[in-house]
Image 1 (cartoon, one colour):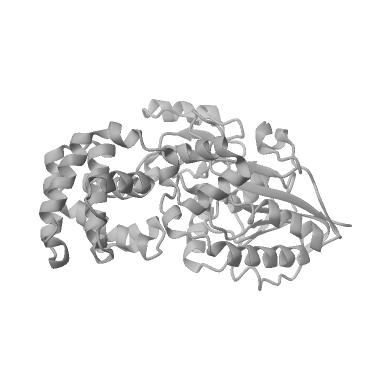
Image 2: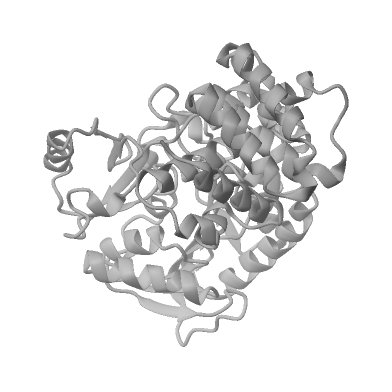
Length: 435
């Protein structure tokens, strides 16, 4: 069973997340996590993830057992209580292990030592309340108020609730395959390996989440890459791009670059993050696909020739990927929206200037916020009389008719594919420059 070292690592991971680091980055840069081995590493990652995924509900439950709120300077005490509650109610860790390690963590530092008895008492009460107490808490509790209000206005209370419920679930692992690969044969191989694999209507396969994708059949062969079902759809809106010049702007981490290259396009992938572009290069090499890699800000990118098509996966709040990145509700605030929306508008304008006459721009974001999706498309059409919207059809996106908006854009929601593992939230608009 994982010991106090794993819990200590989780506390440091949470500290980094509260400071603004994405969960994956926080894990990668936490030294105590690096020192963990085997099951302890898996336990620490799972505990950090579930504590973030259910933070709102955990805080609500902890608050019921506190006589008064903890002072702000006692943030670490609250984190110890959160991971104790997550172990007891979500991971079903034996009560003695969850409680004793929490008390041990409290006794390690002067600022928390005085709270050791309180932590012991609250953790025991939470354990006695049982997971039923957590299940009774409304789904919206795990969503910051500003997000919930926005989703309720945009999608209605029923859909907003369904989105929040989807975010509580551990997402599956989706794979996109290179053209020519026999997906059914690969699914059979996954099943032989003991994995409950199944095909996706929009292409690819869906597996249960695994801790090490590099150990899966086909990884070393470069037959597939990891990509959420929703994330694979925007590239499909470009149609037949074999032999065409295509720019993938804001390309990292590279799933769409691989799709474009696999479709036979002459791809130039642009992103300002050198570290993330190294990963793109590694995946291109693994899958034996080719693309030109350019480390540059998409707003400053000035190619020698214009493109037949451009995919712009713009920076955004990423609220459509909360099920995969449960840190987002607590690291992204409403104030970020305005700055991101302004950046997205500039990127659309610049991307249009890089298109050949008659060329296509697919603008997409992994956000649920209309300021970053629907309103951006509407504003771009108003600013640029030289472009037109090319409506999306359900047939292009795996028959997801509910993902086609009245305006003809694509809007997937985490609540779609309910009962089948759901999917990320994405918006995509297809725009054509006049010839």
